Image 1: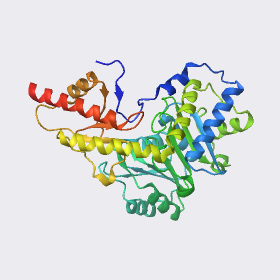
Image 2 (image 1 turned 120 degrees about the vertical axis):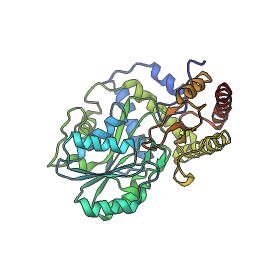
Image 3 (image 1 turned 30 degrees about the vertical axis):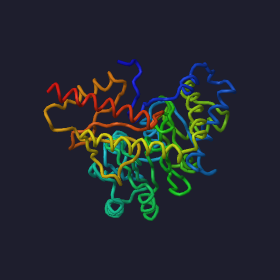
Image 4 (image 1 turned 180 degrees about the vertical axis):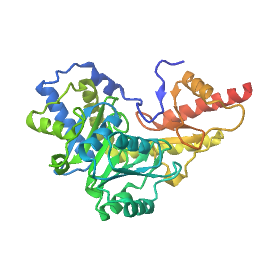
Length: 367
């Protein structure tokens, strides 16, 4: 058994040695060098999003969910009205955030096995509004389904509704173009397609939305407007920053650029995904999603109904072989998930398929 399995998960994920080494230095939170590092990370995030001068990038401490909650708390007033488009666990999490905050919201609850139908969003906006905002998950890692964010954004703009995007497992590889989508805000984190480490989220947001006269964040620590003002004033974080995480993210952004940017990273992930699906099919494991709806991020496979299969044993044996996968999260399907993102190559996927073949054969033979 290896002490450091390859993480075939949606994040945290396997990082490069150079990203790990970036965390070996200690940084003073008010050191001008760290302020410059933060500023560089913020500019790098804006470049990836193709965001113009009317956008700002606000990093903050915590996981991606912290960023999503900060986005909602900072932008959505109690009476604004927000439509939560949900076809998985992370859409449901947004709905729970809205409920906890007492926001006027409606949930468009859709099956988790298919992309969000744009027409359903149009109908919900027309029948349940008015909604100042709509929130949607770009790639729903519950299943691995890719939602049609461009179509949804266009429909929302036509209805006069601002779009909030949870791009947690897509940003850095899949298209998240602010110029094309004109989203109000987008939330993501350091530890997925950017291939950094956990501990920092961020929101890319249109600046005018942070200066509303009629709304202030109900949260002290998740107040994006206050943090953006602080960055503008002196380049500093309001509270103790995750210095090592930001240093790792700065290195990860450099490596993304060196790889060829999001398009090149997407191509590698897509090759991983195609190889994985074909190889698993040869072993008898079928993906839940149709190929056209599958994002090259994480793949949900249906659990075999045969008596030989037990997920925990399958997981443990694969970990002994040096690979960590993910349990399933779909509502009506027994599944497990295998990620294809991170510092993972087609050769790694081929090695995983060899391990999966050995584990499957051993479990079947034992039964």
